Image (spheres, one colour):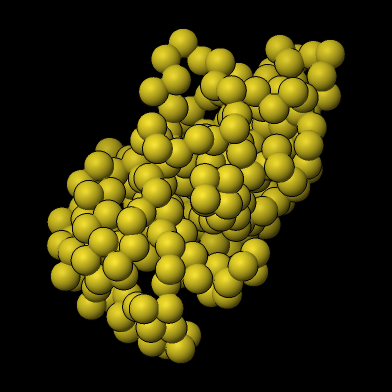
Length: 257
């Protein structure tokens, strides 16, 4: 079995593949202070709930934007799982996708994995929108080249800033939608601003990116923890795939072994 690990700034998404089938997956808060032994304790329990033992894992691949967690996970894979992890972004991993930005080493591992997964699935020009701690727009040409993209603060960052930097505005749960764009109370107004506002921002950037990528006609794919929440407020998202990053990790492992 393959253990695929995507370490983000706020959450980690972990999946276990049996062949090409995603057998189980978890979303766990990123604790930058976690030790190797703490990871072992947490995942011994989570694996056990799915009937998986450490020695069932035969390979590990890691994508990380948090260097300290990358080191801890690599040590966990080596010490407890007895595997030699593939780390996306290292010279040992060949992605098969040309990166045409000014400094290819700057690209986040998760963005590269998403581009690989989306192009493998759709085989066309693409804009991949990942709703994480930050929202990223990643552009892939019809020939499968990574062109670059855009980055903006994510929904959680915006809501935390709104609650912390204002005296009277409350923290709001946006999991329940606003009734209409015009909010008739403070909570409804904040929900409208976040959900309809971010939906509009996503649409505006997709429109501008498509204009620059013309004459290619890229499709758009949304992924990440907030993808299913924000997609209904966008008119430009063609596909939603919450497991895009994990499947990209599986693909990269296949290509490198």
